[in-house]
Amino acid sequence: MRGVSLAYAPATPDGAVRLVAERVRERLREDRADPLRDPDRATQIVRGEVRRHNDFALARGQEAIDDEAACIREVLAIVSGYGPLQALLEDPEVEEIWINAPDRVYAARHGRSERVPLVLTEAAVRDLVERMLHATGRRVDLSQPFVDAALPDGSRLHVVIPDITRHWAVNIRKFLSAYRTLDDLAAAGSVAPQAERVLRAAMADGRSILVSGATHAGKTTLLAALIAACPPEHRIVTVEETFELAVRAPDLVALQGRQPSLEGTGEVSLRRLVKEALRMRPDRLVIGEVRDAEALDLLLALNTGVPGAATIHANSAADALAKLAALPLLAGRNIDHGFVLPAIAGAVHLVAHCERDRAGQRRVVEVVAPTGRVVGGAVETHPIYRWGAP
Image (cartoon, rainbow, N blue to C red; front, side, top):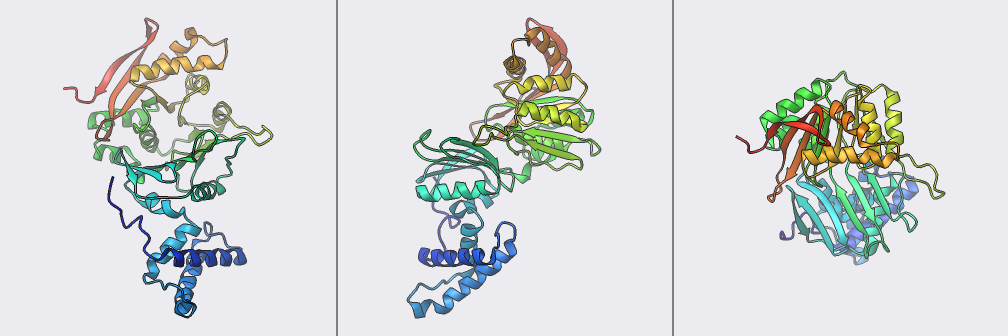
């Protein structure tokens, strides 16, 4: 574990920060100002309250604030940011943050986890979650103890609450802007030049690519970079359970699913989104992660001539194709391998498999291409690239 960093240590007396933060909240309520929508106004109020505190601190027997700039940052983090986690969220090296309990907070840097010297309270964790969910339109409660949501910066939030867990369990997976393109991944050593050329050409030619790997192997990052490599005239429609693919493209529509309401109505599934996406004239359909019966809708779309891209959890490229062949069977009894396997063999052009090694380095380790044939009850492939091969 690292030593205590100044990024986590309060730079001003706790009592003074709390007093200023409370007065700022009152001012924001009086002015009906939303610090998230009007950050300049929030900063102006905080700066004024910090100076006002120091003007009267000695006369009132209160602690003075020596470092006004640091206090302004801390109060802004409390009232408009995410309090004690704000420094971690702003750290460009932090990839993911998770809370197992109020006194057990972790972060991942460069693929390796470390415990953060930060102690919260149960109330502070609940307050953080409520603040994060406020702008997302999603909820978590006893009737719905799990929630996935996208934060304004594109980070993905996942929360589980008691009695499913002993404590509120929070995961925040950040989107790192340093790896937006295939060039960025190649520069970081995550994609070898040979693999990068193959993948870039496939996106330019409108071929369908499946990205596979284990959790935290870099699948979503690679998928986003592949989307960025699409020709600028292509219309791209992305489908996700929760917005996570923070990509830039001239002509892009992003869709996300919706949880059911308290009455059990209003749910929007990935299967529904895929069908709606096909009505939106896509030049490429992207599914953030295929994990259920939506695999059938993806295959049907690919076999109508719409190029696609998606991620799937698997231990190898071959396992990815086998899993993609199994998932459509969840859609109903009328689907069998006799339909699914030829559909995959004819519609999926490349599988790029990602791995993360013990040092935390993520890379594309394998690229294979289906031959279009089904042999021995499996989709036949031939290797295009393998990391470490001569």
